[in-house]
Image (cartoon, rainbow, N blue to C red; front, side, top):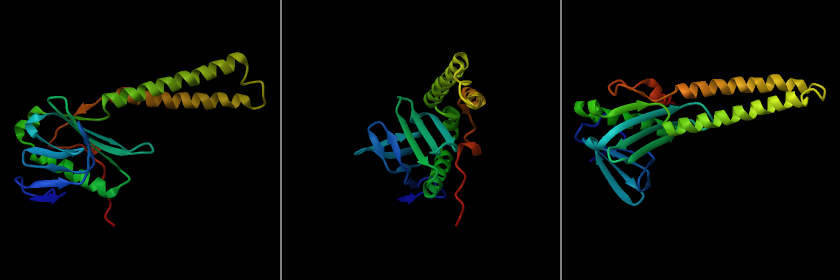
Length: 206
């Protein structure tokens, strides 16, 4: 028996959630939470992994930028990664995602909660990309500033010097972003009390 996104289903009843998935083998459009396993499609193949195979679970919530998203990555002991990622501009997906995470965590047993590593925040790869991007922009802006001052380019035309505080403003902003990114290492959390910063806010009822 399958119940579509019903977090109140008894533990022995499988709960199905219409969420996009990606893993080894391809992408899928749903994931099923059983009493002790996860089932999903990877392309044309059906995949099933038990909770005992899970080594770590990562949650990330990105509310800034043009494409805010929520992510749940499930890493298995053999290196396979199952990713559930949704865009926050789709309220229906947000509600289903919240129900999935809640249901999934509730079905994990005490021994599994103790063994699995629970992390929240940006993945190391995405964090490194952000750091490199900020550093490159900072180098570019500082190069423009030094070149403009040394060559006198900022003073050759009327009001051209106004570009100096503008460039400095961008340098300060990028420095702040870089500092926050450097400090934003993944942190562990208690799976029995999922932090609000890990889950998207529940959609408002219309």
